Image (cartoon, rainbow, N blue to C red; front, side, top):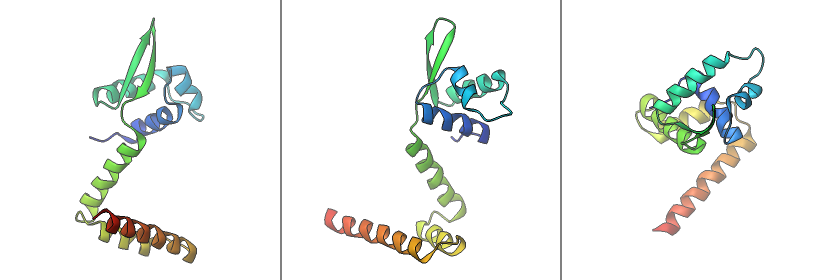
Amino acid sequence: MYLTNAEELVMMLLWKLEKAFIRDLMNEFPDPQPAQTTIITLLKRMIDKGFVSYKQYGNSREYFPLVSKSDYFSDRFSGLVKDFFNNSNAQFASFFANVTDMTKEELEELRDIVDNKIANKKTQK
């Protein structure tokens, strides 16, 4: 299950802050800020989806993420590869290398990352 764009924006703020009251989230939004009720509605949906929880302090709630940023984006990336690249990481890599305007240095850095990953896989056998 994924988040909507608006929910992802709130989630990015929660990942940045680690935990936050509504006022903390509101302070992080650029102008024009959304209505507080909008943020509360988004948080309720995110709680229902299992992405966020909260601690109650009197009438206030302190929200915190239940899903890490890396886990969420790993799942999103896997879905992207599955849906758009026939579940082929090689097709994605080819697309990425051909479509992005990477410099020679960036391509070499990418090659080094891949070479290191290959070397690590060989030593794990």
